[in-house]
Each structure stands twice: as C-alpha cells, then as structure tokens.
Image 1 (cartoon, rainbow, N blue to C red):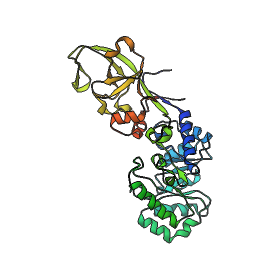
Image 2: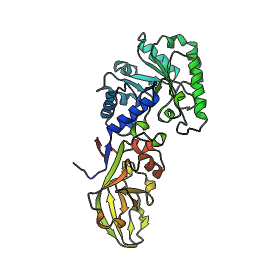
Image 3: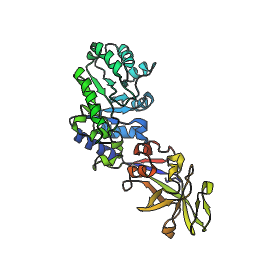
Image 4: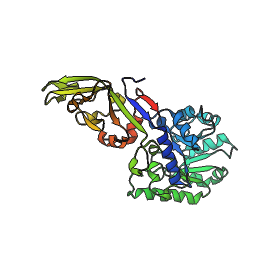
Length: 358
C-alpha cells in the first residue's frame, strides 16, 4: 500500500554486495559491520544484521548497550561490541547477554576484568586513543596498563582498536601519525589483534587494515568516492499531494520568501525538515522527476516542501513521486547540496517514512 508520505527503499542485496566486496578487498583482515544508530538510520537492524550474518559476518559494532540488546534478542551467536564503553552498573547486563564493551580507559578495564574474573576466553576489546581525543586509553591509562600487563596478557582473545580522525582525506599526514601511535602500542603488546580502519581508513591501503576493519557508511552506499564498486543501497522519494496554479507576483510559503516571477505551477510534496530535510534548501535546492531537476521554492516547512513544476506542464500529477536521492543522484550528491555529510542524511531519516527492504 502506498501512503502519502516519503518512501525509503533499502537494497539489502547492495548492502550484501558491499560487504563481500570489502571482505575481498581487505583479506586477510576480518571485516566487522558497524550497525550503530539503527544501521545508520536505515532501521530494520534485524534485516540488515541477518543479511550480513548469512554471508558469514560474525562481528558487529554498535554505539551503546540499548542498541546491542535489541540485536541480541534475535542473534545469539554473533559477537557484539559496544563502542561507547562500559558505564558503572552495566557489568551484569553486558556479561549475562554475552555482549563485549569496548574498554575506553583503565578504570573500565579494571572493572570489567574484575567482574568477568577467570573467563579468559571471552573476547576483550580496548580502545587506544591515537589522536582523536574523544574516547580511548590516554597516555596515563597506557602506562598503568604497561605496569599491569599480566592482567591483560592472561586473556586469549584481545583486540586493540583506534579510530582515524582524517581518514576521508588520503593526503592528510595525521593518518600516518595515528598509525605510528598504534604501532607503538603494538610493540608493547604484540600478541593482541589490532583494528584501525573504518570506512575511510580501508581505502588508505593495506597497512591500515591490521587484523580487523570496521566499515559503516560504505556498507550502506555512502562515500562512493572511496571506490567505484561501492553500490548505492538507499533511495528516498516523496509523493505530490497537491498541485496549485500561482499568479505572477503571488508569494509562496512561510515568511513570503518567494514571489512568483511569472504564472507558476507548483507541487507540494509531503516531506519537510521534520523528516531530515535541511532548511538551507529553501529557495535554492532541488529534487528530481524522471532525472530532471525540480526546483524548491519558498521555505522548507516542517512537513511540506513546494516545488516549481511549471516546465513540466501537464506531465506531473497528484500521486506522482519526486526523487530526493537514489542511485542516479546519491546520498553523497544530496549531502553536498544540503551542506552536510552523507552520514547525517541517512541517520536523520524520519521515522515517518514508509521503509521497504528489497
């Protein structure tokens, strides 16, 4: 059934193909999937995790314990890492649900290892800060760890991760500086497994892959500039719910920011800033109808946007769909037009949209 709201199509086959491509590219490094923020706003965590599990993806990253528990309800055998770490009082929840916190400082390391006691076969993951200055073991934490190295070395399955600040920029020298910081830690603890690259870092080259990579946006078809084989996986369209004929000189929308320069035919579509559309698009943005640009006129409203369809004459009718982004005009393209990043385009996707998984 079609509703008078925006419709999102999520291509599970494209997501699967992106994962398989990255696995081949990164071999022998393991490819874990980052599915935080409801799979980057695409929802259907179970559908996306299920799709990836079927092609033998065994490890998944989320942001917090709430996200982890939602996935764990259905998927009992996969390994789930929680990037935001271990907050006080969460130990029992992590342990009883077999979820692994990414330990971001020495205090978390002490609390977690004390709680799990002699379960030395449980996976352990540490985050070492190499320059992002956001999360991770700081210099003093690392010194404490060195002094108590036996406590770490008794665990048999330890992965140490870090996160690149400038991975999207291949020419940025800070990427190599961060790599050197991680290599310095690796010299102290050579028996651990290591992970540095997320989506951007993967395409910096093999030396950034280490033992595991953690793609996110590239799984979902964003940042296709990384590699031409990344397939677009999400499309958004919105229906026309009214067509008006406006006379020259009449105003359109809130605050009367647009006056018709000629007799104009307008189409109102049911999408607005409550659905993630940037108000910056007012009077200068555009969407597409059958691959042809359709200009936004007037101010973007909470639930509605007005388009100038004069040039289409009688070729557009109520109920037709306007394409906001798809494989021809990607989320990268739309992000550039909106003055933002593709991550925000899909993570801010409205819960009001009718989502279809194909």
